[in-house]
Length: 409
Picture 1 (cartoon, rainbow, N blue to C red):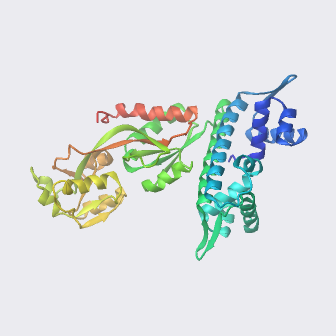
Picture 2: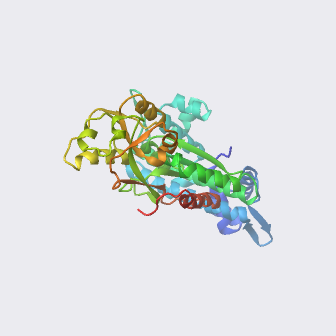
Picture 3: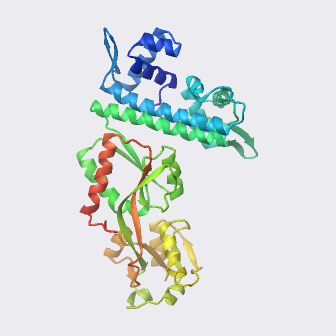
């Protein structure tokens, strides 16, 4: 697995790209020419490619070098902004400007910062990284000393990361993700493993557009890797904003949940009331709101689009929301609860196509034609996908009309 190279090596690499000269880069970085030559050589070994063409008039980046330089430049800019944010939040003890701090920052320190921030425990963080607790503590302490601000505090339950630490942690994760994309792009240039995409998937996407798009894309690009992560929306959004997920696919939120993400609608999904076959309401031609109010329900948790629709069915008519509720998001659990009782649920028909086609569940004839859920892609606003990742996004867009999904709303 590719590991983020030493940040100092990355800075040196970028310096040589900009100056086209090891000697000039040496003067700017205050490093010896042999040290820079060695740093470039280590990067080329790690990336399994030549980054420069050595000519009589200077060092010129190869195609791989240009590709990687673009990602390194973005990564260092992300780190610089993270340092600005952290030092702005931290105390006035900061002893250097962010640009100066970036010159001394190490990958080891940032890995320690991320590990301790996530684990909130030095011992557990050390095990997660595969290093000793003392080494991890030393790296974290060195980073605190470098920045001149408090990053961690001891609490009764472990270690608490300061707001400054959280800002820098997010920047470090995003920077590392940027470098990893550079590695993927270099592999693609050399017809090696052509990269991967990490997708946060919500229920409706898992049963409609996503599997079809993945299958079609894999038929053309069999070496492209997917990693699909399930979970509550808030957790997936957190991982997206921290660079651990490339995109979310599922119900969109309005207004947008954060100013650093963008949403693209793919299609809209109508909502149905669903019950077990043989439910008393399934045989009725007309159903009143009073009958729905008298039923017990299985609903998503608060804050989800479908839960908002469920509550609006009653509140828009001036009625109280039913209170005999089970909150659940697992389709397996929902199906079992419906089949074993007279409970109802509110769900997209696309999400339960299989259950409806086999007769495992049935719809209730209550008009909800005015309700719909926009389904689409959520991405980081400044994310720059690789060519293969962009190609997969286009596959998602092209899959929608093939499935006959509604794009008219």
